[in-house]
Length: 270
Ligand SMILES: [Zn+2]
Image (cartoon, rainbow, N blue to C red; front, side):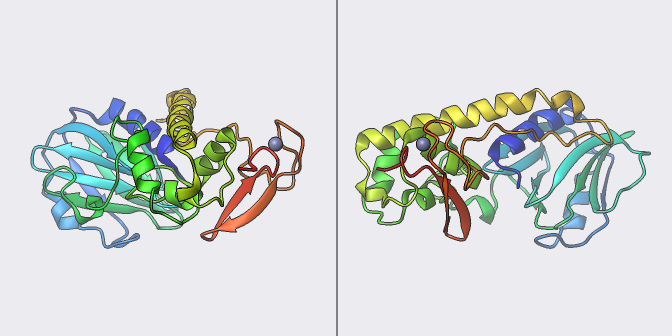
């Protein structure tokens, strides 16, 4: 599933091609992905200039002076900017056309979304989102306050969108490992020092992933190239039963909130 770094890399890749271009058509081939696609509202943007491509959590927002297209990649979505003559592939659901180029959304599992908003992030989707992890609003004071009365396990708390957006399963696993924090410890049992370190690590890990993903940007507009995602160097995620890269103990895997969680029983004993 695309996580925040992949979405940010997609935003950078798409921006290069779309910013300041005029939307010449909006083609919707599939009326519903996760939600109904508001085709007629999206088509009111034909003729409008794209003024920015921004991101809030894992939503991309293609902005114009008259309204915005909100895109979420769901479980399996990807975006390509290609020549409009390129033949359609299976699961190519939506085209945002800009002259002879097109931003094409492909989504095999159809958990993605294409929506319309009149003003920026004024959409019910954004109402309960917490701070962006890479802004100053996500800081130690904030996380300490959020954890003070929470008995939920720390992994679920950092993946909880009202606490902070964009920390998905892969990065929650990795960040807790790097901090030596057991994923199943209740949030209110962690010290201020531990939570301060966790905030710093979340920022570092996400920044590093975005930087790494940026190196694949050159492939972004290739028709059969990879859609801007990247191989991640992971310490624990997907490595249950293998040896810890720090201490050689066998990594354990448990389910937390239905999601696979991998941790090192000796490095993450706290
Ligand atoms: Zn270890």
